[in-house]
Amino acid sequence: LAKTTQPISMDSYEGQEVNITCSHNNIATNDYITWYQQFPSQGPRFIIQGYKTKVTNEVASLFIPADRKSSTLSLPRVSLSDTAVYYCLVGAASGNTGKLIFGQGTTLQVKP
Amino acid sequence: DVKVTQSSRYLVKRTGEKVFLECVQDMDHENMFWYRQDPGLGLRLIYFSYDVKMKEKGDIPEGYSVSREKKERFSLILESASTNQTSMYLCASSSRLAAYYEQYFGPGTRLTVT
Image (cartoon, each protein chain N blue to C red):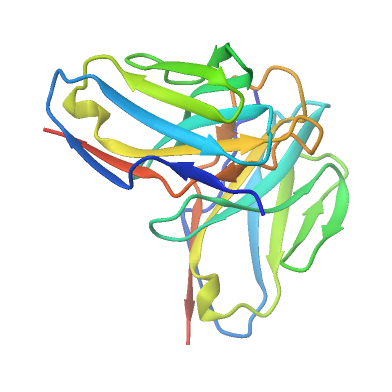
């Protein structure tokens, strides 16, 4: 089972690009990488998911190197409202998911 | 939009009480999950269900049971609540056909056991 490791916290300023890296050295062949965002007093919200290379949507980009042992969530031009906890999740797309594993989460603080 | 609702936002129970946490989703999702969230520990999976009447243990099932009699409803049961079960409980659902890990979460129930 792939355990994930990510920084506990990060600070940034409005307008900057933020990159949050997640390590998952034991990722399995059929595992996907998913990122969630969580604001205080709310449930997590799905941001982006990928398997390899690069995925981009209207919110973020996800970069995954060829060995897939890490991934980087990139948030372009952050604003104060991007202050949240970001979770990295690695697991299979189907089948037994009894061992869903969330990372510890990275608390991103965006300053004016 | 997918909507996942939980029966209570805040709940206070006494030690030894039987506690029911209810979760309902309106998107006909096959999969439903119960997590707890504690400071410094992130989200931890308690149980999940991939179909009606089907369930599987997650990472921390001890002290909990679940029930899924209807597709849209997934209940978490604390048979005899204890103070170490004070936590934020989050329900989620996902479609089997969609990317499995695109889960939709409810707002959470903050349970306090005194």
